[in-house]
Amino acid sequence: MHIETLKTYCDLIETGSFSKAAALNFITQSAVSQQVKSLERRFDQQLIERGQRKGVAPTEAGKIFYAECKVILERYSALEERMRDKSPVVAGTIKVATVYSIGLHELPPYVKQFIKAHPQVKVHIEYSGADKVYEACLNNAIDFGIVALPLKRPNIAVIPFRNDKLIIVCGPEHRLARRRRVSVEALAGEDFIAFERDIPTRKTIDRILKQSKVSVNYRMEFDNIETIKRSVEAGIGVSILPETAVANEVRNKQLVALNFTEGVFTRPIGIIHRKGKVFSEAARQFVNMLTSE
Image 1 (cartoon, rainbow, N blue to C red):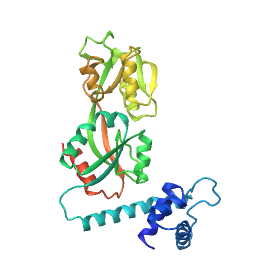
Image 2 (cartoon, helix red, strand yellow):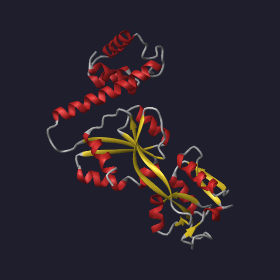
Image 3 (cartoon, one colour):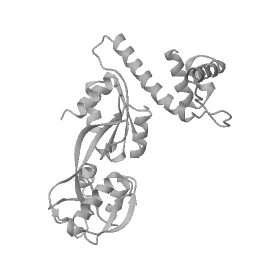
Image 4 (spheres, rainbow, N blue to C red):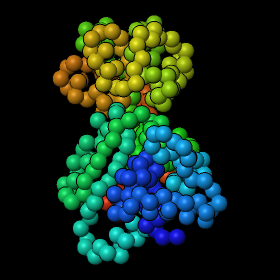
């Protein structure tokens, strides 16, 4: 079994097409089919569904084989890179997936600093929901993900990144806007703009309110922080958000930020990756920079 055969199989699953997998590997469609059959004979397992009308779909065994093949290909690629590259210059492409609130408001300074230090590295940031970030990690579609309140999941490793300070946010005309600090109890009965219930940050905010036995009037629930901010600006309600995510609006006096009198509440942010992941030198340097402070 050759490394090229594993790559052909992964390309077939990722493209869902015999013709595209053949083109990527400069072989015929018949050769792709023969390689898949050879793998199936070797492991005595059917790896792709037969009789599919649209595209190529892996069987359950095929999904497992694909995930492990990606790890092997990744390790082989890292080995090639180390054996061939005698230059001290860090180069390549890094793929990072993250949720919107972190990608838009936490990462930009780090990306700018990293690119300045390593101009030959391309940093590709993908924005999506937390579940998709975990999925991309497990499928080895990215180098690593960055999420709020990282969860313990099988085959996922977590590297602590930083803690995000949470604050109360309201519009400039709101009755609380002239105060600098507000207790959680002051939010009782307030119209509230919240994250959707399945978003980890929402669960942390609900816990803060519950600990103080405070009930709010949930007016709207959204899956992204930008819509929440616009709703608070419009005077529809108040919210609890990460301080960094509202810095621009507070500076421009579109929103007012209030600290909690009870102290500082935070949400942890973590870097997640598939266990056993072999980082390229570029990815390793980026993670080191993120965690060096």
